[in-house]
Amino acid sequence: MKRSTLSHSFSNIVLMFTESALTLLLRLDPELRKAAYPLAKQGTVVALRLYLPHAEIFATFSTKGVLLDAQLPVGRSEPDVVINAYSIQVINAITTHDSETTEKLQMRGESVQVQLVKQFIMQLGVASLIQGLVKKFKGGKGKSKPTEAETEEKKENYKLRIKEQQTQINTLTMKNRELETTTKELQSKQKTLIIVTIAALIIMIIAITALLIS
Image (tube, rainbow, N blue to C red):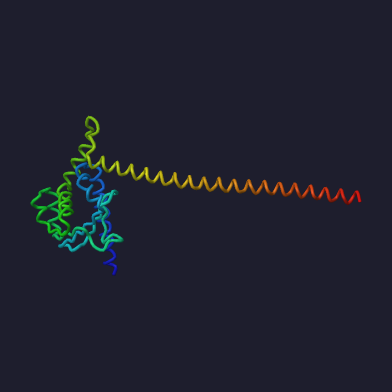
């Protein structure tokens, strides 16, 4: 039981470091972001079933990056793409960037998504990280022109922010109207109370005067 717990903890640590590495690669490599964008837009889930050692990892593509887990995401009954391969095959595909090596990986799923996953794998790798670091620290003569995928992603993020802000404005407008209505009701009740009080005082004065005269 203790060995199983340690193994599970170690797997979680490996997944966490791998996920962090993928996030770093996506930040440094515009071409990798471009390859991941259509998968993230569809929320594609990839099941990676490895042999030697035996392991099953689920990769979920999203606007936040590539999220790794040992279980399917909540709300999903099956992955979009399934990769069956030996661990060494996956390592070779990532490190060589070779289309022939990537094609040898057994993939099942909708043809378009399978092709997108292959393009992502071919773009992924240590070489991409090194190139990204060199470009980042080299400086250069200014920022490179954003890719079409990056521009589209920014547009989508702006649209979401505008939509959220509009929702907040609408909510505040409704609350403001409710407060105005409540204030008017209170003012109306206050006026009525003042009128009733004045009328009662007048009636009381008249009654006292009548008693004194009589």
